[in-house]
Length: 199
Image 1 (cartoon, rainbow, N blue to C red):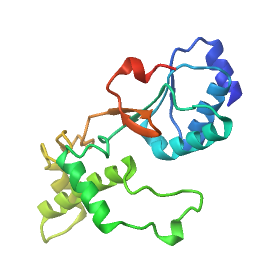
Image 2: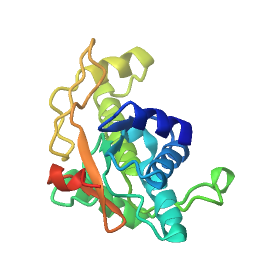
Image 3: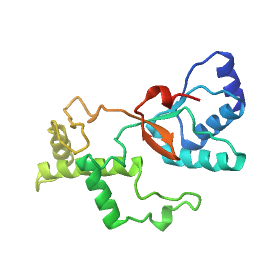
Image 4: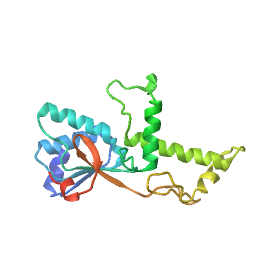
């Protein structure tokens, strides 16, 4: 990643927005910080925030450096630690109660699943939406009926502080974006932007 870091640094970038999988984005962050390129680096939720953070923490411990300063990630769901939101509290209760295990056939020995994460909270919310669509469709299940049931969702309260709405020409149910930064080796909501982007 040193060539990309060098090009962006030479261009005078004040901020870098990365879009990619966690390994590549972590490699970019590592290369940028090793080169002294201390601008804020932001990743979109697709990155796999927790997996990327684990790589950066592991590398940071090995190198005796902090690779997580001025690192911002967007999320499409609120913090999985925000139990003040009823939907998040319910998600955490159900995850703790059922403690779902990853099937052995797809387990990656290099990855340690987390009990709570942005990814599993997003999956939980998706499942709740699917269940509501199935409930509205009733006993006569069909593909067109399921689509129609989903497109009838208006202001659905999932307990996450943002109502979900679908229509026949709107298939993005939620519009909120949540920004997170690293504090104490965990992603936390950005409350103070000046502190979050400080290198």
